Length: 245
Image 1 (cartoon, rainbow, N blue to C red):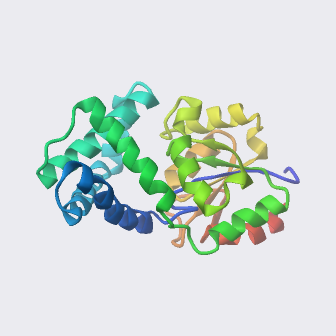
Image 2: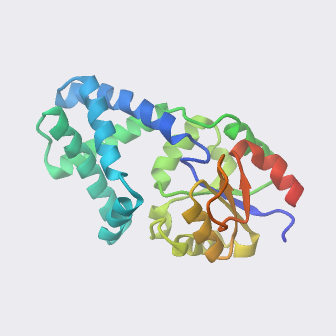
């Protein structure tokens, strides 16, 4: 076991609370889109909630969306198109052309993400402490590196990370062990030297298949044995990791 593992952190569910993030998005998306496309801000908030709920209705539905895209650029284009046009339909306004809808969706994200504050209690302090102690940190997220930059920079922890790994950087989606195999190869980290944190048991299982050690971040008892370790929250990691290494 190495004396100093390289740590790969998921974002939503580990660093940031997705439920808090979603609520802030709903209020801000109306502020951004209503002056441009019309409609009431509250209507946009409700539309955003409904469209996102539909996209993430089940793990199977999300995996089908990923499987339908030959690459990340195609996925990203279709996601923004479906997101904006779906909201326009519910609000009752005419969407722009496909290309303009995608551009506007990306503009909305770039405007909203830096204003979101959804870090779990103690997460920022834990990241800074690990960095101060000399641990190398990267992300291991299903979000793009661009989105991760927009979230982590306002948190004040961007300088604590090396590569912001998302599917756009390594050419594969976070839907199997290949994601971690390519991530580790790109980072030039031997699997045995990596410690991957995720709140999704499937993801920690895939990390284990790729040869990495994993930590499931969960308040509940795991329903499977895929993870090497389990902690309740990211804030617990500095003390936990010092006991291990």
